[in-house]
Image (cartoon, rainbow, N blue to C red; front, side, top):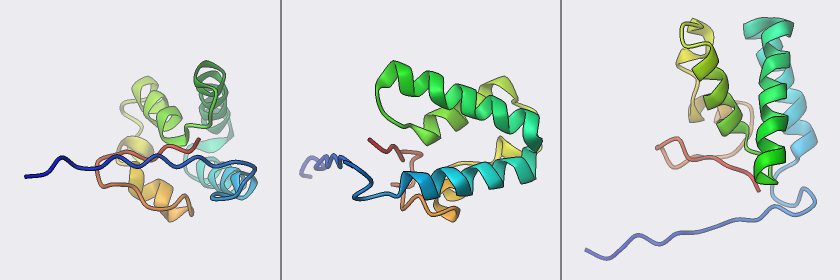
Length: 100
């Protein structure tokens, strides 16, 4: 069986993903389902990860948020499907959605 190919997509200046639109949609979605305080915490985590990695990792921030709030039933099941639902494109079905 041949080795799977790895494809890396680089998004430069919103060419593949409109980050402003995604951010606005995600902000509304989080505030609606987890409230302003917890949504604010998500964005703090998002910015920490962005500073560490040098790129926007929406799913990484969600995963870190879930570690802090493991019993938050609203986000326990949130995964790639949630990110896809707000227009962040398609994942690979294994939790791998990262924008660079």
